[in-house]
Length: 237
Picture 1 (spheres, one colour):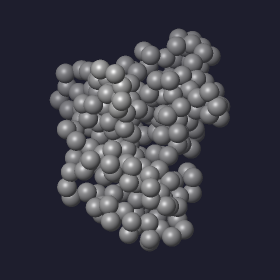
Picture 2 (cartoon, helix red, strand yellow):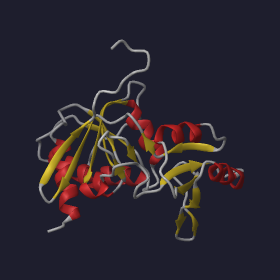
Picture 3 (cartoon, rainbow, N blue to C red):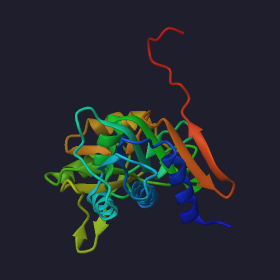
């Protein structure tokens, strides 16, 4: 029987097994990360974990952590020990799309600072290629956004501004979030480089080569996906 919320919680519990006393954690954003933060709060309250602090990736997660009594700090220069977050899509190579919750920039800053970055989710998020089910979220500066939209179209995207009650959705950073839909398959690394080169683009939701492992839950339980070693250009065989 399909039970996505149970699956999300099971994936979150698997990631919690990696948490040790006195760790500094990156706390993700979204419905699956919500389960991780909730259970982290329970374990700190009942003493199963001690001395753990968190760096939230959104105001929503910050509010949840405050409610649970999880100590929070600013992201230090040294980064975090472990970052745990959900995903919108993930391939078997552990490349991912993230950011449909609108927190992609802060999520990527924290993930890139982490000694270990782990994804959690349910098996509906597994895809054979990125863009198969989800759009690519892109955070852009409001100034000149119409021109930025045109540059995104030139890359083959159909950019659709994220809507919110009362108007356009804005990130915690005060920027617009655009969901870029693609009618054809794309090369994720080429697209990431092209998006990085567009003036006005702050960040995109392509998380490539960053993930150590993913816990993915479904009817048959939780599976652990690990990234295969990547070939570095110029490296000796």
